[in-house]
Length: 403
Ligand code: BES
Ligand code: ZN
Image 1: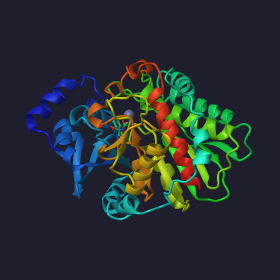
Image 2: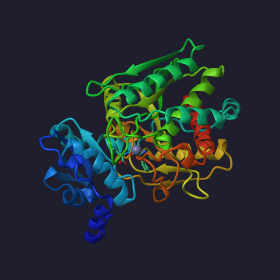
Image 3: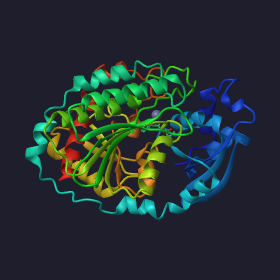
Image 4: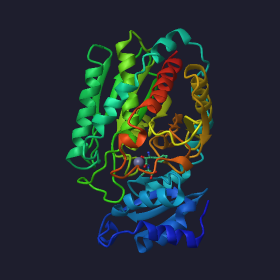
């Protein structure tokens, strides 16, 4: 929904971009992004000559913008549209324009196609595993991850935190001969993604992932304070608890299960874009993707888990809802929309894979501390009870999809 001219300028004024903002930098590199067309006028007004509209189709626009403005765009979209006003960053103009054209092909396929048998019939296997979820384990991981000054995709802290995740996950699976943990390196920045594989008999693959990086929207950069406790230490901690439970059990997967901690999500879904592309290129048969990005802030009263409808697969979303009803009793779920490409599920969706994004709250009730130094565990009541619901859901999702 487009907001009025007046309220836009007011909102922009409230942000108070400092005199030394990155916007003032001359001669920075230009990048191409795709963004919801309803944000077009807003972007042009805010960024002036630093943004150029290239083409619009089916409600999506290609913009040329200087790279330094990206963190500002992200921040302003959050504040002014009160929604995840995401966008995708592309390598070049051709790729951005391709995105417009693949809208109707790969993305429609990813939205409507049925990729798996969604019957729920593994209660004997699932129930004991779900009962193993311990909120305190999730709490400990959030505490550790949010103790890095930041997990920014460029710079020392972002590299150190990636190494910590790889070592932690390696420890969780040290007794499994069917598990490997690897870095997925990226050529354009230092922070690697981390991928843990539980190898099953079949090559059909289930992906459960979240982004590991954090960002401070107003003081972006490698030296800023960005604990990212909710966004997204919570998702990585939730995934870690799922890994621990499956690894400690005698569960032998039939399909191949991959857990991912994506690099560089906060600057345009960059890590997941490279990974999902390389999977597509190798024709990996991914039958289900679950994105866990922000799981520990219960912003909406009387609602626990919110399935994002956009850039996700309709059938799998309903399946995840049924999984919650069956295996996480008392937990209420509903639907909302995120906005254009708000997290890594959009990368998989763009490659034609079926993705879901179960989220912690309705968009209107979102955690407003994200992308600031205030995104701490204390802002989620200092416990991980909300995230524990997501860990139960994810364990049940994996096992039911696996058989
Ligand atoms: N975790 C957020 C996405 C989010 C925020 C979803 C609030 C729902 C409510 C994610 O890390 C993020 O910040 N994404 C960016 C988009 C990206 C393309 C830079 C955003 O929303 O601005
Ligand atoms: Zn974020």
